[in-house]
Every structure is written in structure tokens, then in C-alpha cells.
Image 1 (cartoon, one colour):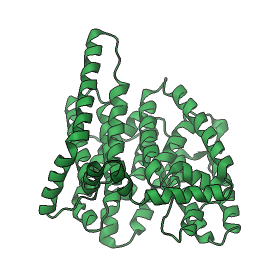
Image 2 (cartoon, one colour; image 1 turned 90 degrees about the vertical axis):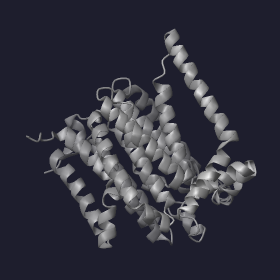
Image 3 (cartoon, rainbow, N blue to C red; image 1 turned 90 degrees about the horizontal axis):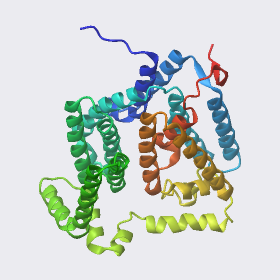
Image 4 (cartoon, one colour; image 1 turned 120 degrees about the vertical axis):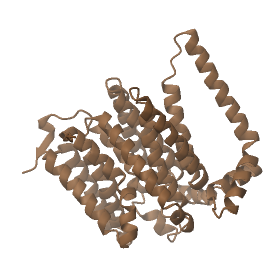
Length: 401
């Protein structure tokens, strides 16, 4: 059987997905060799090959790189913890700039879906193969994040695949399996992301134009109401039972323990099971108000907390700490601009609309509770996909000689 060669658009889509999932795909090699060198080699090969086949780079991207480089240089010169600032700069290049570059050459969104689905299957297999590793190293956060990447690929393929019923059924099965594993072994924010991704598609495709549509919509609302009732009044005992059974089998579920305690204790349980955020947020806000909303610069928060916390666990608090109230205002304006552009572009390309919509839900939900935007590739992928959407005129490109 003859293997069809990929065109440049398909190669760009594949390279983007391999880059986004590279940390998971190379995990077995890194564990076997005991060094992260294979990961960095593969990452460099992905970027180098992309530059080779495209032979150009967007002028806006060059401007972004220079602007951020100048910012980090100035930041490092005026603080004593310049090593931390340079570390954040490295994260920006790895997760931010490289993601912006790879998204700047994307034009085939259907191929992105296809390759994301295939790579998500491989990712799920890897994570299940190393389930005991994550359990023994208390890696529920990493496992939850990795499984959410797989869930992302399954759900976007399921709701956009109308031609192959067999693959649609397989993707539905994988969605259920992955969501259940996240509930049992992952972190809570990852499970919330999964629920929001499904709700995004379910309400997006609900169009009430006839009596049949109204009936289907009513059935959905009834199901959601019953599920809500179950979650409020029955979930604690069910999750407690599952948690006990897992413990007897030798598995510890951090998330289930947190869920049960939160449901049993009500509002006070939410505060007690917030993983220290009830102390973290007031401290971060005090730093902002005590400085009259002036910028502290990148790397200040971990330094000020004696490295007890690597970041504030909230996107808007972190932006305000880094850039001050003026920076937060500019940050808001930038996202208003991007959202306006998003709604404009998605009218002409629904595949683009669904991909960016899911990336937005994932990134902003996660960054409201955990993580830092400097090392969240999906966050930078949103910016790149919108900012460089259909911006392919030669006047905006610099040819690489």
C-alpha cells in the first residue's frame, strides 16, 4: 500500500501537535535514560524542521520576540533575583514564543483535529503505562494535566467527526475513560475543564428551530438538572465508596479525598480543601495594594514568599503583580481585541472557532486556579492562532536565507 506524503499544511499541523504533546510523548524515553536530553533534542528538531519547510517568519513574531527580550533584560538588571527572571525568560521562549511561531503557520485546522486525536491516543496509553509512577510520586497534578490533553483531543474530534461513525464511537468511549481517570487520579481543576469542554459543544450545537429541537433541548436541561441534584445530594457517599475501594486496591486518590471532604463540610470545606489558596490569594493581593498597584516584575512573587509558592495560582493576580494595574489594563485591552477578532474569524471557519474556543476554556479555567501563563502553551496557542489567522501575505513575512 502506497503511503501518501503530507503536504506543507499537514506537516505544520502535525508539528504543532507533536510540540504541544512533546513532554508526554518523550516521557518514557526520559525516564529510561534518566535525562531530559531526548526531550530537548526532539523539541529542537520540531522547531528546526518547521523553519526549514516554511522558510519564513512573521514580522509580528519578530517584534514580539524583541519586545519580550528587552522586557526581560530590563527586569533582570534591576532586581537581585535575576536568575529567576532569566528562568522565566527561558519558559517564555519554550512555551510562549515557540508556540506562537508554530501557530503562526497553521492553516489546516481539520488536520490539527486529526493529528491531535491520534496523538491523544498515544498520550493516554503512555499515562496509563506510568500510572503507578504518578501514584508513587504524588504526581496527580501532572497526571491530571496530561490526561486533560488527551481528553481535549478526543472531545474535539468527537464533536467534529460526522463522517465516520466507528471513529465517533471510539472517541466517545475514550472520552468516558479519560474523564473517569481524571476524576479518580487527576486534579480537580482538570475535571472541571473536562465538564466545561463538553458543555461548550453541547450548548453550541443546540439550535431550537422546531418542536423536535425544543424537546431535545428540554431533555438536556432535565438531564443536567438531575445530574446537579445527584452531585449536590448523593455524590459524597458515592465518591467515598469509590475512594475506599481504591484504597483497598492500593491506590490513593488525592482528588477523591478532596471532593469528599469538600462535599461533607460545605463552604468551610471549600476553604479548607483549597490547597492553601485561602492564604495564598490574600498575600498576593496585599503585595499589590501595598505597592499602590505598581509592577513588581517577573519572578518577584516566589522570591517574596521565600519560594514557598512558585506563582500566585491566578492569572489576573499574576499579571497585576508582574506589570501593575496599567499592565492589567493593557492585558484586558489585548484580550478584548483578540476576542473581537476571534468572533470575526470563526464565522468563516468553524474548525478554527471550535479549536480556539476549547483552548480558551482550558487555559483560562486552569490559570484561574493553578499554573502560570509563562509556561502554558495552550494559552499562547490561542494568541498565535488569532493573531496570525490567515495573515499569510508576503509583506508580513521575512524570508529566511
